[in-house]
Image 1 (cartoon, rainbow, N blue to C red):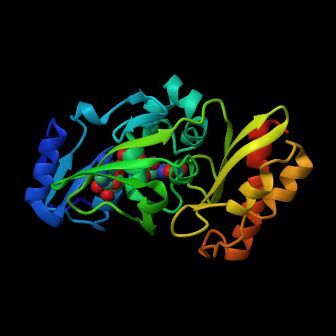
Image 2 (image 1 turned 120 degrees about the horizontal axis):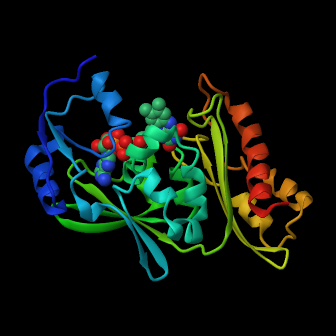
Length: 284
Ligand SMILES: Cc1cc2nc3c(=O)[nH]c(=O)nc-3n(C[C@H](O)[C@H](O)[C@H](O)COP(=O)(O)OP(=O)(O)OC[C@H]3O[C@@H](n4cnc5c(N)ncnc54)[C@H](O)[C@@H]3O)c2cc1C
């Protein structure tokens, strides 16, 4: 199908983009990589009257070393993340998950900010940023505000972003040289996750000092597997400890049931994938 008619603007500064969004009101949409929005427009699931293209705004791209955190521009593409040594060194979990997103064409166009703002429960980058305790920097007509990832994802396809706000930057505290792995179950290559597990662990002399684990597509929003984290900390990095900790993966979660998997199967997957994610991260 062909999208409804819309006006198109392509500002070159963030201030101009915010001004255009404020002026256009609730019927406006920003477009980043277009890899989720274009299908939505073509199916006429959304019919904005104004489309504000963020692709010419250089200040929204790139990865910056900002002391104890990485500051990643919302318009940084998946390829931009994968090719950046700062990301592999300080946020390996994000790099590992990004590798699993869609196919090479989509990875060249899609952006971190677009992925997070779209907030698909099956999106692969929400759980990693939740596990890494990222903070979103959001700009709007009344200025800038910071929202922790734990409060950013509100519901299915819904975030804390207001219609007149733009996600500017994702700040990720450095997890330097933490082991990490994103374990994703999908039916065919390049498909979305049925369930996936994002795990990153800090191991010292064979003992797990810190652990952060989050689950994709178990609920409307990504969730932390706190029971697993608590069970891992202080344990030796052995297959037996990991297997025991992974049994806590679905605790406190009310999993989705849909055409891909029912709640019981999702709970089972969460445990199996958690075990694999942590074991692969550590090499156990
Ligand atoms: C065939 C196919 C397979 C895919 N497989 C996967 C997969 O396996 N895993 C996965 O995670 N994703 C997958 N995707 C989705 C893909 O990753 C998209 O790139 C992503 O969901 C959206 O990013 P985008 O930059 O393309 O954003 P767009 O499509 O441009 O925008 C998406 C939404 O976010 C809003 N938005 C974008 N940027 C901002 C911003 N800076 N501030 C405020 N709002 C903003 C837009 O208004 C829109 O509502 C797939 C897509 C396709 C078409």
